[in-house]
Length: 328
Image (cartoon, rainbow, N blue to C red; front, side, top):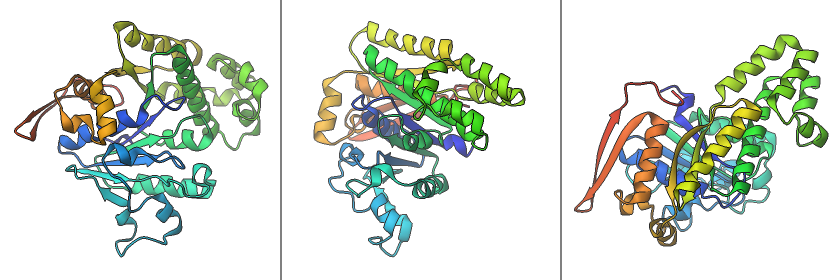
């Protein structure tokens, strides 16, 4: 696995779609296979991921990272909190740290550099909702990008908006020294441009008019951007098929290949795990939601994973597929 591919970012277009539940149980699953995993709460200003792990009040988080005031003699190593789950460490968000939801670019780059320096087999980032540049820049550091959506059309359309904003941000950062292209790509400051460049082909035409020598690099960025989709809160077969709408929208308007990784059913097991502050993968790795997560991890890492709980011990079977998979 490449250095970049060890970072898995989990985002979406809106809040309340279940990103944290999906991300936490993905991290637990990877840790149960014996791999070193760090789960990062990157929802700055509204940190709550710790509750899903049964951690009532994290001792350290990005508050201490920003000001170094409360760290012990271990320094930044103290930020990596024990979860009680073998092989899984947790890095807490900033919580109610003033201004943490909109940190300046210097601190943002500092946090990104710190995350990239962490030593682990997998680093999973659970991001905040929305499409502001802070969130998108964290999302784009991942070698593997996951989008979580619910089956409702409003959520699908929000996820499409997230994909578009992420793609255009990737292109924007590649050509940040080019003011003409920046004007075309800055959707947040130029609403008219956002409508004019709704499709990637519209952007391509304008790039070809202004800077034809840059067109191939734009095409490369589009080809390399291959996010994976998880549909959460599935209740019927029709809900799973809603993911096809997003795949078709992304391909038609952005020329982006979105890969369907799997789904998570709506169930009492998931709701109970949230209330009880205990990941459902730990409680019952053979439940239907747990099987869903194992299938998602399998698609994400190109492996076959099977977990069984017996006499309070969890046994793992993990096989690597020989064929090249998504994100490899």
